[in-house]
Image 1 (cartoon, rainbow, N blue to C red):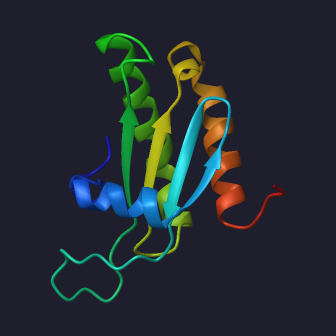
Image 2 (image 1 turned 90 degrees about the horizontal axis):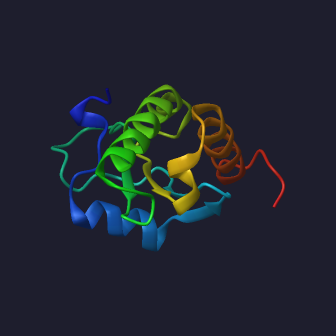
Length: 123
């Protein structure tokens, strides 16, 4: 489970990450990253935590499949949030193939996208 303080919940936060952040696409998902963005909702914190949100549409599958994909992505991103710059906003959008994908495939795509966004991979 991803604790509440690490989740994106507001529409404005999702929009900020998607519109002003960088994007890396993979076969199963697209990752949007807004590095080191300050949280306008946090009261005077010096280093706000990195936060993540997920977009899993009906194109991925029915409700059971969508919830499974969201749970897997939440678990995967929980271990990777400390590697991100403080105050980062991450939005992970699952593509239709994510519903049929194995956990390891999602992990590989997420790692590759984050590596690219953080400057460790080739375009």
